[in-house]
Length: 55
Image 1: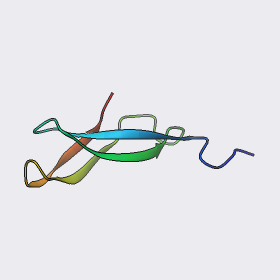
Image 2: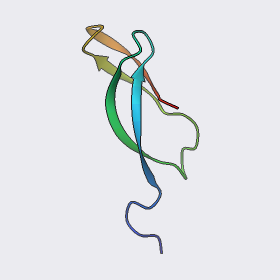
Image 3: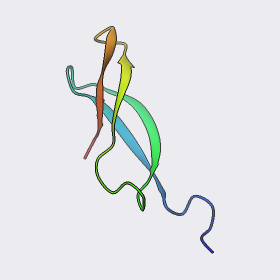
Image 4: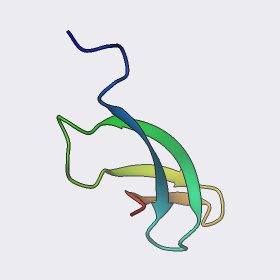
């Protein structure tokens, strides 16, 4: 049995338009090994933009 949080890792989301690192989140690296991509609000661009996981 896996311990709680063993498969989760912290990730930083970076705005694709301005390049600022705006969000910290966690993802299950076992279920989603590819890079995470979410639509989030960027306070620097002042609009909803695509945020990708930083390498």
